[in-house]
Length: 234
Image 1 (cartoon, one colour):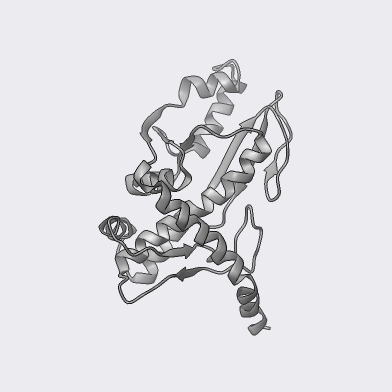
Image 2: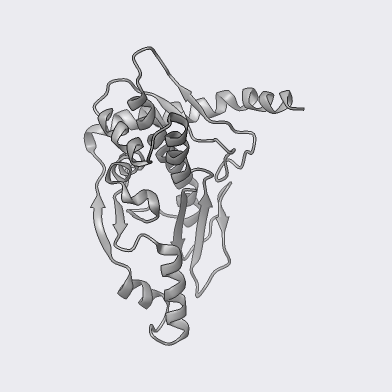
């Protein structure tokens, strides 16, 4: 799953977004997509690759390709912000010129498009435009994927030194409870460190804006078609 969260002292609400009750005056606005790292695993399994690393190797070989392709990563439906269990995965724009490398690139980009789609209502709920995003999780190990997401979302992504932020966050909460840190802000400020920053590539702005538009159009165009697949089952 690819999860994005934004913290703010305001709550404006937004369709498809989960806003948690405030803690010390701060709201967490968040949303989970259905597929993140699982997209890379699915593609590796689908293609018979021996390791997930081969997905990134193949995608890297296509980064200078002039063969645009859209992938909808809705292989198990989609959660935020669409909340549509009938959504289906799809490659769109395929031609005889495309290769497995292009498909691997599109699969990684599809997760980036899903994140960009989610970021817009998150910013609406928070009441401001996010300057940058901190990045963690297994997918953050790939420099290529980090850069793709930064380019698609048009935001700097700051990869954390400790990318296992779930258990790390739980440890910090325990640290606050034990008095090691004065409060949650102090814990985050002292313990959370940035390892590398990925800056959006200006030359790719127009390309990814156009591709993201096709991503949105493709989802809408297939809503009825995808519902029809479920009717076939029953």
